[in-house]
Image 1 (tube, rainbow, N blue to C red):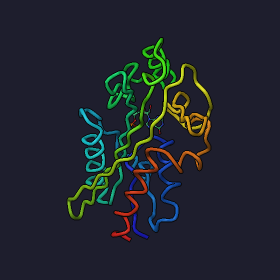
Image 2 (cartoon, helix red, strand yellow; image 1 turned 120 degrees about the horizontal axis):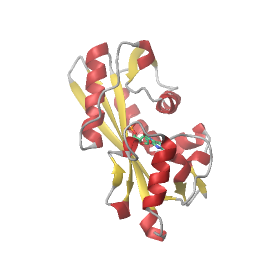
Image 3 (cartoon, rainbow, N blue to C red; image 1 turned 90 degrees about the vertical axis):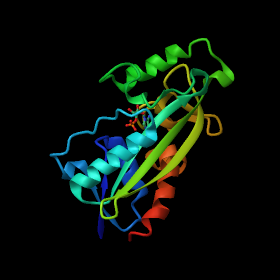
Length: 198
Ligand code: IMP
C-alpha cells in the first residue's frame, strides 16, 4: 500500500480523516511516525495558504504524499470572524472552552440570521515527487448557540447547531459528523484526486 501522511498534530482531525480514508488503499501515517517534526506555524491570512504551507512542509520533510487541513469558523455578522484565527480566537494557547466562551459573548444579544455561521475546511494534497499541490474545499452551514450542547467532537462543535438535524456537531457521533461535515465534504473531493495515486 502506498503511504500517505496526515499533516496534523490534532488527534481529533486524525480520527476524522483516518475514518474517512478507511476504504482507500493507503497506509496512513501520522506525525507520530515522525516525532522529529514540530508543528508548522500557521501565520498566513488565509486557510488556503496555511493548508498549502503545512502540506508542502510535511511532504518535503517526509518525502511522502501528504494531506493537510486548515479549518475556520466564519460568522457572517462578525465579518467572517474568527476565520483563520479560529484556533487562537481567545488568545495564544487558549482552550476550546475559552474560544467558545468568547464567541458566545461576542454574539450576545444577536438573534436569528446574525447567529448564522459556516465551517470552511481547506484540504491541501502535496506530492513531493511532482512538486504539485492540489486543494479542495468543504463547508457546512449552521448557527451559533448561546450555550454549549453535546460532548462529542472538538473545538466549536458544541456551539455549532445544524437546524435541519436539530443538533450541534458535538451531539453527533464520529460516524454521523463524518457524513455531513465541512472536513468530510472536502475529504470526498480529495478521495477523487487520490484515486490517481492508488
Ligand atoms: P485548524 O487551524 O485547522 O487546526 O483549526 C482551527 C480551529 O478551528 C481549531 O483549533 C478548532 O477550534 C476549530 N476547528 C477546526 N475544525 C473543527 C471542527 O471540525 N469542529 C469544531 N471546531 C473545529
